[in-house]
Length: 128
Image 1 (cartoon, rainbow, N blue to C red):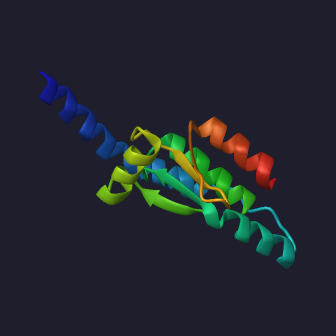
Image 2 (image 1 turned 180 degrees about the vertical axis):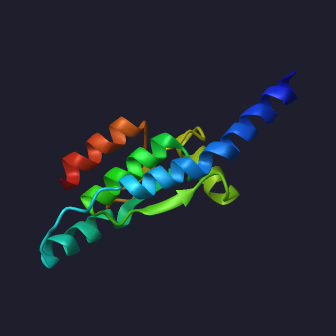
């Protein structure tokens, strides 16, 4: 029975993935306009950030759209397709739930932030 349920959801994910990605492509907002100096400061500030995500996860899409709206250059790490990133997510954050924003502070301390709404709130506080 478990194999049947797993197969059903795998098939459903396979069918819905193109629609989720197309929806993201069509509805991603234009980035905030900043001066070159302001954007350079933002780019420097985002160097310590990485988003662990799955490409077709709706919550990850939500965070990526906000990243695009804020005009941020944040490294995207696919925890589904790359076992190294998945293991780093498990080792550092303690679970493989996505989206997860890794914030590496200037002193080298790492902070793992889960939950799309919390990530979006934090990004807006820092960069809006």
